[in-house]
Length: 350
Ligand code: EPU
Image 1 (spheres, helix red, strand yellow):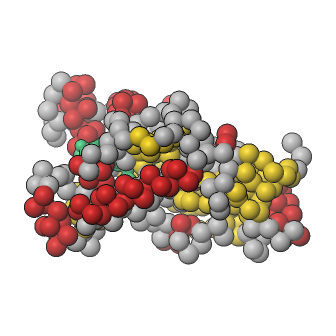
Image 2 (image 1 turned 90 degrees about the vertical axis):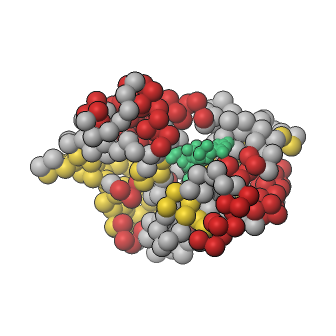
């Protein structure tokens, strides 16, 4: 399809929260040539450019000024080196389909990340993670075009500065690149990671054994992927049916003093050790304790089965959603003195 730019386009169908934002200008990027044409258009018209993937981790306010570019770059190729499989994927490929394809080919490493909505190009931006695995565990490099210079850059994991739901693309280089492809390293040898408590419980229930060194031989990558998919289907709403952007807040990282203070009120709260002597606690637990699980304010609300997920029930607006977000943040702050950080990226203006 030839490259074209449309004016005043609704983005309602391009974001998982189904927010009715309008892009001043809109185009689709199906090839590297399209990317360069989009950059030239933006430069000629003095527009900012916002790359949009699957729209599964963004909050779009009413108007996105400038040019919104939907990344649709396709293609998957692979190269085997011994047991290692280097897979290079176009940024517009669907993440969940990639996980399924990898399993069909017996390339292992992505099974814990099954059924995460969104595109491959968006995965490094927030270093997607679930059930004990993060993208950075198999990430090799990515290619991205710098929006100001049009240069193609290759970046490795160190360049991307990955952290917990973090990368350079959410901070210093926010909006400065269009990611075009991602290379990951998988393996023909399974390396099953089943120790994440919720996954372990679900596997034990399925296999009817307590998992230990001997019994873990029954765990296969396919079983992990199936089990993760089952857990996600039970806990997390399908964005196609109930508009949502997955976890709306990050799980807070507390120092020992903050944790000790919190434990006075919440001695039962699960605590996960993190880096630098910090501890991660579930934001969903804190929100639930504030009585907000299942809370609804008009057309937006907190999911009944996962308090970390905010829902747009139909015609909810970004303003309503962000007001709900602030309501939750201040309730948690007042009760526990803990600050909840928003996970999705917020774009545009009212
Ligand atoms: N919990 C509650 N109330 C709830 C839901 C959960 O108290 O309404 C408690 C659970 O009992 C459990 C703890 O919170 O002890 C953790 O819950 P869960 O395993 O569901 O995970 P999470 O911490 O809420 C994180 C990720 C998810 C990821 C899961 C599984 C973040 C921000 N979220 O959620 O990622 O799928 O772990 O690994 O780290 C996403 O990023 O969009 C996302 C869905």
